[in-house]
Image (cartoon, rainbow, N blue to C red):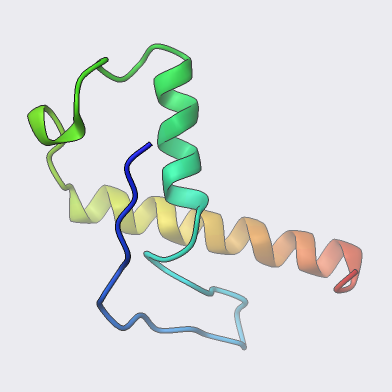
Length: 77
């Protein structure tokens, strides 16, 4: 699995629970799942991946809201 650190600053919003847009391990884990399901090419990402900012933002927001729901349901345990 490829990994690169994120150098940009991202907004964290404690009022809504949306944290870490663009950071963390959720993105690589998402793409690992797609790769294992066979929906991604078996080639280095530099050969096929095109950054789609709107889609990445949508996925990051979705992940943030899902983490917020888990936090709410389990009370920070």
